[in-house]
Image (cartoon, rainbow, N blue to C red; front, side, top):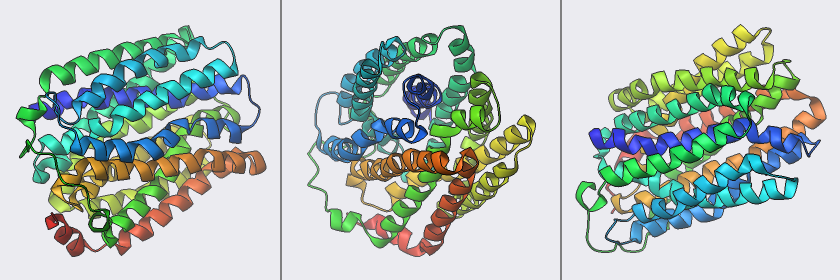
Length: 393
């Protein structure tokens, strides 16, 4: 598992970057825009790139053949560009320059995100993938905690400090992954020949489609909550900007604490069962948040919800990979992010519009409803059918 921990630095930087981006960029946009719906829409720029680029890049990386491997070239190109534009975001001088920096950063992130994720199943046997996913998501969760806690402190000191810090972390993470992961050596059953073109008809079997639908609905809930929570905390609960962002630390802290145990639970009891338990727990947690009366109550529920989110998130990616053929890992990674990106595109602007119409109190009612739709999709999946499709080649 040593390589998994080292690969986790890549996940650490991605999670750190996105968490801080979601927490503080809305405040920059709020300086120029009065509509929460428009702010929510602009916060989904990354998902438009993911929608069109990540399935293509994921499939392309399956067929890439270089001396650095299949995935690494995309990291070597995308990460440095992302780091530069990430550092420029707080130095915007107008809405136009802010949007330019956001677009360029998000475009470069889309280049390396799918290949980075696909490295985990590349170097990990299927029987250990839920445990490995727990480890790398533990690292990602640590990144989120630092974004919401230390990031809040740095943001209060100077709004540019957290962005400059994350930019430096991107370069460090790239160096760690590049120096320690050799795809030609470490990939399980690495082939020196270019894989044949992916058969999407076989890949998109009924069980995969149900799982993709479930992923869509739970990301509608999570992405909307994360993108709009800081504004919710300020406007609905009366928290300061720093306190609102810091509250999300409890969600991320719990996710980190339960990341590795969730992987072991998925390996022991089955990925689907653990995901279903997590979706039910999240639905209950979000429903209870509608009656928050104190910051303590808010943070306790967020802590509990983070544990259930670990149940879902840690096991969902290995499950989507296991429902397809071994030669389609990058492709199925792209499909995973295609669906999650569709949800992220839809969720913030729609929930933002609801907030414009009905107030911030509607946020967690909508999040609860979306989780219930995800639960219905998961309950329709058949465990035996899921196992059988893993033999498709």
